[in-house]
Image: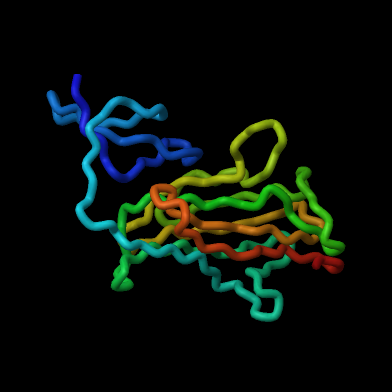
Length: 192
């Protein structure tokens, strides 16, 4: 049948990727697919101007990073606004982590000590391992959609850390150049 493509992607059920969204013209059914399909695409006459901001109430100005002790949680908020600063609900986002964490000496760590747990609080979703593995598992991205207030709120933990710093990046997957990033540091007595 004939399809009509939607402009915004749609998050899959496991929050591991975004899918293409389309409408079947003969039935009006909205559905998604992980592979691009032959569709007619609706284009906006004027580009939407959106901004994304990754923030944390645990920001430490001296370290320029969100900071928590090993075993504690770092609260994170991703907010999407339009050009006028109005929060935008139902916008797809991607939160990612750097391939490596850095130890105090500036060396790269990518073993299980650098694994994190990302828990979406609002809107709620299952916690996700937030890790970088050479195995090809895509554990370093979480995909979601902003709530009615234009936000997604998380808690981040790194319980096996020897004291590591990890880069975090929020982006609009439908507009990849639009990003906001910060470092997260989980401290121990000898952390960076």
